[in-house]
Length: 168
Image 1 (cartoon, rainbow, N blue to C red):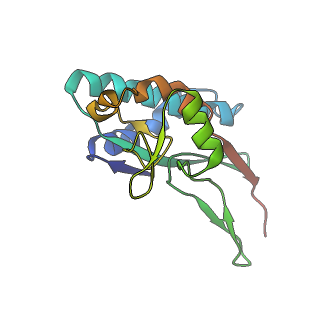
Image 2: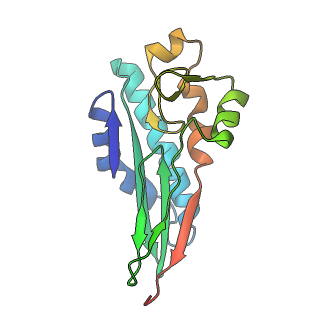
């Protein structure tokens, strides 16, 4: 699932290509690595296309991968996955990557960015999420912070959660 911001191109690209990039890796043996590498590669491919075409949109996303009765979930941004048990209990399978989170704020600042409150907490006063695909924007460059410098760091460190599939 993807949720675009600044246009629909990036989210469409995520929806059409992420699965192929994940499956190109040894997903059955190393599902967490396959998810992480798929996210990184998709972001790199999108940023290359966006730069060539002058696009500045981006997308958040969440992806679930079931391997040997274990469900793996990875997300970038504020796209969420929630697992519901037979007993009706909701289990958060993802965590939002938001500037208000202290760990995300520290990570962005360590990379040279700033978190600014502009109606809500935002990266460089622009993005309301700290991890996403795309967003190589003129606004970011004018604010002396190129999101491309975060690409491998913001997505490769994307945590992957897992849960075993059981009858409960």
